[in-house]
Length: 159
Length: 159
DNA sequence: CACTTATTATGAGTACTTCACAATAAGGTG
DNA sequence: CACCTTATTGTGAAGTACTCATAATAAGTG
Image 1 (cartoon, chains in turn green, red, yellow, purple):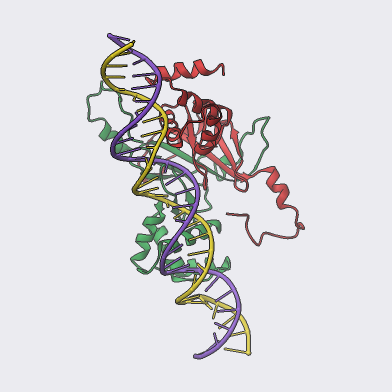
Image 2 (cartoon, each protein chain N blue to C red):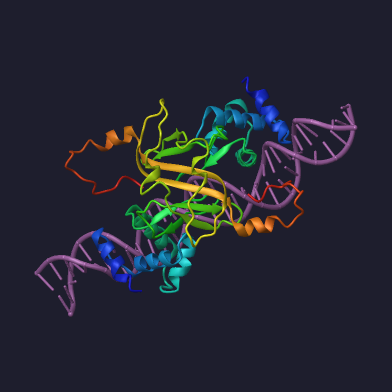
């Protein structure tokens, strides 16, 4: 809870009022990275039971716009939030169980920020580059290898 | 329409029946890359008016699983589909108007497929890496520069 | 041409998120 | 410190994108 003041001053510097709802949401995201709005609500309600889902959506959206939170949307998943911002890191999601891992940036500090444009496309001014790795985590790989090894997928995972 | 046979044989090779619905969806995606399901439905209905939305969803989902189509989900947008598969290209989306551009892969043929794992994370077996660039396209930049240049954002874009 | 089974249409339902507006409270002012 | 302004939150409802269950249809095999 010693981070309360840090969050408060960050909110101040963005011209936002310091409310217990915002602090509860920030703490919940910090302690539960890669959580969806629903999970953040559940976590935040342990401190602030009267918090509503709609407030969580509003706060998350606003804080994301302020760059105090980062949001990303894996396929077939609700949006996930985290407090780790500004370091241009990436994410790997398991297509089987959905687990998410952070992946540090490979090419220095701001790697993927310079795409190579086609001749016939109009370049954009890039602000962020999200790299989303999709694969299968070790646990799910182990589970899928239970059948005999000659057996090949006749039904490809789940969807 | 000369691609009909190519689609048909591709469907066959995946053990799928060749239906006019599938062909209409494939043609619609091919001629309208980066379109959402709704747009694909509208385009496909020009050839096949009795096509239903649910069928489009089923077909898109199935063909994506077969890797005949590629699907990606920009933030705050429904899923978009394209026929360009297998070349590991990326996408840039304008956060203001939503326009999408293809971006070829920079680092050779399969670049971002080798993330650098943290010490404390369990590596996954990566299958695909989607790079999503977010920025502002030239058109939207021009529109935002109408106020005097000393003016700095007091309201940051839209959401 | 008939038959089997994949595929599509129909209708309803769900998950996630947003909207409109009233109630509340943060933080500046006197 | 009470008051006031206005941002913020709560309430209730609605919307979008998508999925599910089941019946009708049609592709492809014999």
